[in-house]
Image 1 (cartoon, helix red, strand yellow):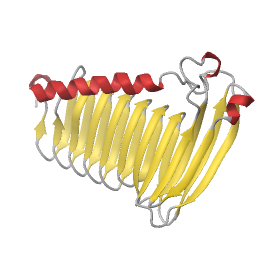
Image 2: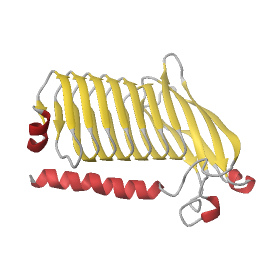
Image 3: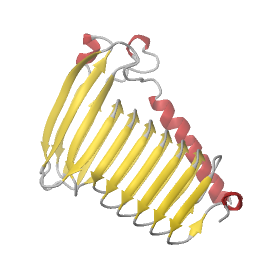
Image 4: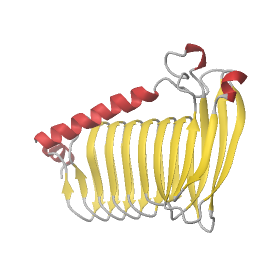
Length: 252
């Protein structure tokens, strides 16, 4: 019981801290100016692709038969001067491909005239290389990628097709996870979670609020700590382990 309460408090804290860190930026909230930010990085021999996205949309798609990471970005800002300060860093660091949306820190909550700066990113990656992603605000999509570790502030998350395990820590926003060839672990602050076609276990370590709906889980389905919202499941091959009060409600 103590562990469950601790995990749940951690999830709520994650929602507050992570989301607060990125609330300031609302891409496209004002009439803005734009400019491309593109790059290509050799990924041969790389073991991991690290992506640090700030405000803006993020889409990462795995490709077979490619040996490069290709980034297509669109910078948005409220003025040309602010636009010039938005940089895309894309480089090789040993066995790491490093991608970062570099938006000056003063484009934040207390920078009233410049709070809509953002960098939308579309990234093509070799399908077999693991991803380690930190995303600020804005929707994110991951399609046909390798093993995925994600820390997300706010915005909807869509994960569809992963060759390996998935780990997600999310502040707020809806989350959809489909077609994963491994185990999925989730810590979520707020927003619904929908999952289907998971080859391994589906484990929610903590969820603050929002419904959880899972189906076609080949392994176990576990919810260690849950705040508000319902839990429903179907076609779970392994064990179902959820908090007692939700078990009674869902009929498990």
